[in-house]
Image (cartoon, rainbow, N blue to C red; front, side, top):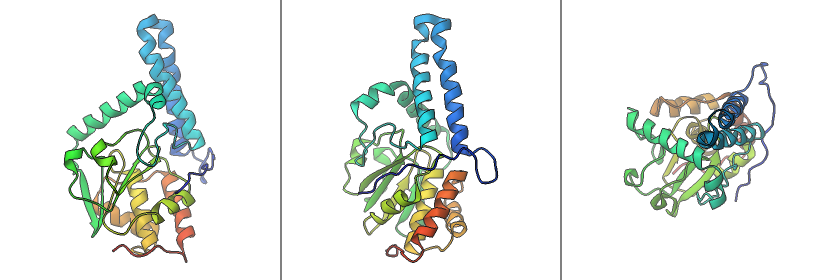
Length: 250
């Protein structure tokens, strides 16, 4: 079983600019504080906004600390009751935005990268194309339909949106996959999905560099893009797997 390790809490990137993870954190904290003040303006009517504001502030702190398991989501994809209650406004907002994006997007739900490797967005139960040996769920903020998370090959590896785990945790998750067809997804099938897919390609020897892996997954799903943290994670992952590759993708 893989274990998350604390991510480096560097506020600046190597070039001196703020990292996207810190920008996310600051944005959530500022928006959270604004919403928290709603109760002083609207009284009891502002309490739902205040609740959401508290959620956003807590999540912003989680981004600063690399707290991918802030919602308590376990490897079976279950979110505990305490989290459902505490983060109810945030979960409702995330689910609403996800469904809106699903309905309005012209992007395919999933794309074939190569034989036995498919990447995409989070699926509804009826959209699952076939049985996979591995069904990798990278969302921290969304819960899978029961019909999907009870599949034998289901694995939850929660990562905060636009963020990245430490390279060692990523390697343990990749090397823990079973032989066979693999489906990888996050919310919309972009950053986190691309991160894990490139890591799998690197680990199996299907590609030799991050640039080659990025080109491979982006040619299959053009919407894939990477934050600075995700690229840095892949660079660290590459150093870890050199000389210790996983078996090739079947």
